[in-house]
Amino acid sequence: DLYTCLASGGTLCPLDKKTQGDYRALFERIQKINPSVWVSTPSFAEICLADPKFDGKMVPELSVFLFCGERLTNTTARKLIDRFPRARVINTYGPTESTVAMTEVEITRELCEREDPLPVGRVKPGSFVKILKEDGTEAPEGESGEIVILGDTVSTGYFRQKELTDAAFFEVDAGKLRAYRTGDEGFMKNGMLMYNGRIDLQVKLHGYRIELGDIENNLLRLPQVSQACVVPSIREGKVNSLTAYVSLYGGEPAPEGEDHGKAQRRKAAELKEALRQYLPDYMIPKKISFLDKIPMTMNGKADRKKLMEETKR
Image (tube, rainbow, N blue to C red; front, side):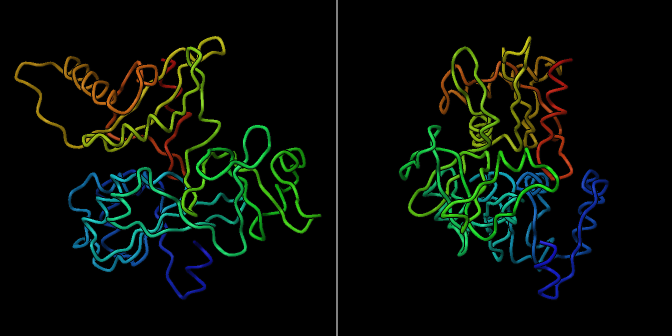
């Protein structure tokens, strides 16, 4: 993002953490910049979408949204397409170890209706993707496994971290191609890469293997949910329950006389019931906590470490 902006003669306008955390300062800054290209995680765009004023009238020069670092949900994509009819929404995938984005696809209204979840795109020239099963063999199209990136975008490893480098990087074709094990799960569909989430976000609960990202994505399918993050509650080294932290849109007024605690329990019960249309009972979080907004890391991703600390209290 840094080099492509400067190489094309653009002006780079980063937003510091303090500005991102202050809605008033954030929107004042965005309006003043009036950017033509937007680069962020989907979560950060969702925070902005919580304000109905965030649209094409507020940022008239905005022509492209570029997303990477997290799964872009159909709900978020639809909102952006509706509010910014002149802007293109581009979904990408690629970790830092492969010089970031190495796939891309434009998300259109038609694609939103046809695919759920959304693809992260076709692989760019110079890069290749293999999906490897647990036994190390290549998975056929449509079957999930670890995403392995090969090609000239892959770095040579971690600086002065030989053990980490040896675990994640390797060479194929007699050293002609560098390869990187991403730790991400995905599969290929119609020539495009589909991203399932982090392998290390899979937990075992009561004998079932559960992908936390799967629960989060289904929470985000509910129209009242703007942000969601699911974390395990760990006791004596074992996962004994799941907690979902959720941020809601506006919300309906509570019935007259209903206290705050009762309203929270009612909303949690309604979300659990709504989730049952998408998930089996063993994947429904035991507890749902409501936050004004999900805490973010410096990279614009949900701060899972901070939320896991919350579950211990």
